[in-house]
Image 1: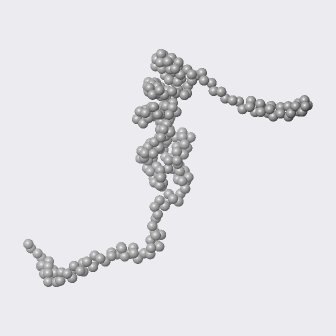
Image 2: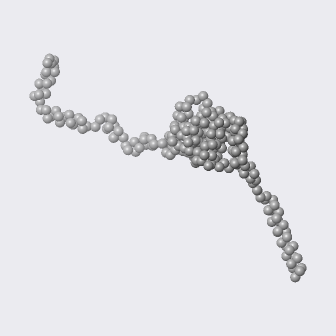
Image 3: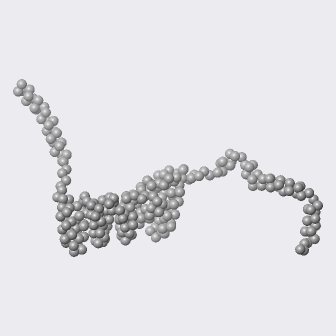
Length: 274
């Protein structure tokens, strides 16, 4: 193997020297701290603590009310043409300030958006919540179905019902069932309406509102199923005959007033008789 003259000279000098001294010097070099370490150690601990930024510094110094207002303003300023990633990114950045998922603040935001009839934005916020595993309640599901219906996306509302709710009809609240029946009725999806009502009847679910029966009966009639309409109207006829008796407060007040007025007169008559 060919070696250059300088390399051969260096090898011979190292072989003649004391190898232990070389190892000792190398270990001393490794044990010495680097320049960056010495510089960081030379900084006083007080200055080092002042330079460190605490975790969630921004979020802890902004009140929850201001953070909620900031998100609501951000969602209002965004256009409907903004992508799903932009909306989800804004929500992710906002929720990063919180240690726990702010489900209460989001419900207030959804109520504000519902008053402003921003149905498209409501759908985006609720879908983002569900993607995080939050808000999986019947109330949130109903709010999403209503927003999809008002946003002219009844097909998505139907798919969501079939996937998340329609598979367990024996425990779905009647309020949510009435909402879906109304969605089907309003969008002329009569076959789906009848199928849903038959599924509820299969679990012996008894409706409490005559408006549900009226919509079902009208759906049967428009589908040409007159016998089914008559069956439903006869089975639930008691809902149309029940009259709510509401006591009048005025009558109660008058009777009490008469008693008060009649009290001293009766006492006078009793004293006269005596």
